[in-house]
Amino acid sequence: MILPKVRDPRLVTIRRGGSLTDSDHHLLALWAATCAEHVLGLFESARPSDPRPREAIAYARAWVRGEVKMMEARAAGGHAMGAARDLRGAARHAAYAAGQAGAVAHVAAHELGAAAYAIKAVRASVPVSEADAAGRLECQWQRDQLPEAIRGLVLDDQRLRNEICWSVFDC
Image (cartoon, rainbow, N blue to C red; front, top):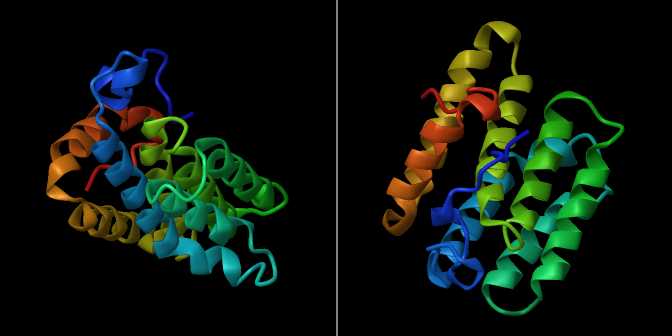
């Protein structure tokens, strides 16, 4: 579960009654794609011939450029999540990160899902004794990638949804 029962209007587009601008929505999608791409190798090492997670990330970026429709990016995200179904551990979480990145075009709040699953992927890729430290490093790396325009929004969103995102944003 990564979405709250009550939506934060800052993560709802203006045309749907919130306050999120299209430019900030695009920045959220690009950041989510960057987070997912950072761990994509964890999926691809397990399933090198399955392009679905990589395609979801590409579709998220293509949506930002206006090259594909929201529904196409969202569908690519769903296909990436399908790639995760029979996997476990780091590979599964990495595919889910890509799926969440593709879904940002549809619901901006999925940006945190991409980041949270990427952190879970990194944590699962190392010995248990190193998982906390690896997760904190990944969380900090993600924060370092945040564009200034959305930095405050994402950091506040992490604070508000940390508990429903497996508390991975304690970094």
